[in-house]
Length: 281
Figure 1 (tube, rainbow, N blue to C red):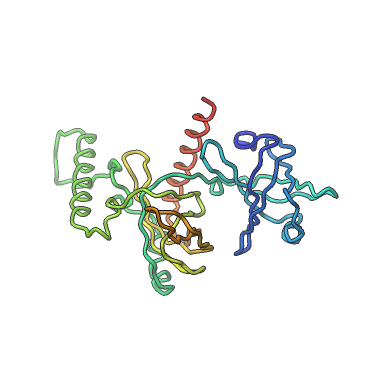
Figure 2 (figure 1 turned 30 degrees about the vertical axis):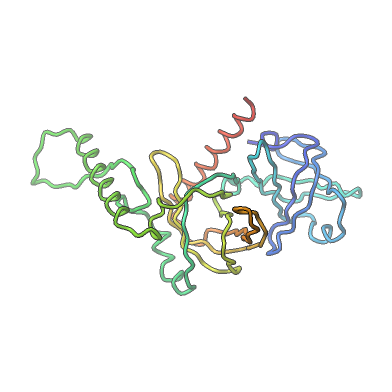
């Protein structure tokens, strides 16, 4: 997919400077675009903006279609005398982002806990791991003592049913706080490199959190990972007729299994295709 799949000439977008903790945002308008490059002009040019943007600097551009928000990571190719900024797409799947409503839970952990558990989260996942809810089995025990005429496919599915039942029993036995399936879906912005969501508590930059995220692909997949907070901004919102302070929290994946990251990337692509097709229809 190129820029033309997400943006159009004259569209107003949000330009976010990347690589800094502040992550400042500026309104911009697209003046030219091709498949691989995009030219924008900052609206209401701010001299502080020019200090942060230079050749080779990284940024994120945000667009919106029918309340579908998306973002693409870019590098600044050049800035001309009229302050037109030429951008080039960073060709990596992990940088594509999409908004969605997903079920997830998290808890803050200490740095020494992160160090102790990092290998556990990044190692190859076992087939009996909680991360795979209804993944069909493709492995059976090699036991030469057992002789059977039952087709292997039937044995595979029986093992799969056993794992599903074990998983369900384990979930039923969990407390309200620990059971992710008792959580309500919340709005998140997700990519293969991180996640953004809203919290009621203020999380400091650099803090580590353990996350359970449910992806609605296949019959359902739980992704377990450790994230690190890179930004947390406070804002006021109205809930039940009262102003409530919440915090927009952005995290990067500090420890995640690469198979799980691939599940996330596949979901982001799937979600984007669905929303783009809905826009075209």
